[in-house]
Length: 155
Image (cartoon, rainbow, N blue to C red):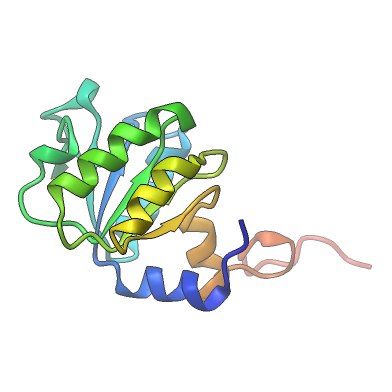
């Protein structure tokens, strides 16, 4: 799918509270460092993983499912296989009447679930990472994809 930078920047600018489904407690897992990054950028991150329900991650209690979240969320970021997406989208639509965005991580796509969410007026992003897009769109990535500020090679 092709998404305009304007759309991606708008989604990331208006989202304040993000539920991350499938977040890991393991610091080497992508879901962990994406959740950590988004938290450090000021997003209110709600970790969702039934295996770790009740544990604390980045100052928030992990919930077992989307329906356990008190209050709404603006975005649901899905770190699960594509075949697990439909019930997650259905739960998100049922739990959050004002949901703005369903975001599926790199490698995660589901056309029917996306169509269901879009029919409800929810923006759907598939096969992308909000951390990477945030870094790219808000000036944190330079050539080569890194923003170290250190020149490590000479011509």
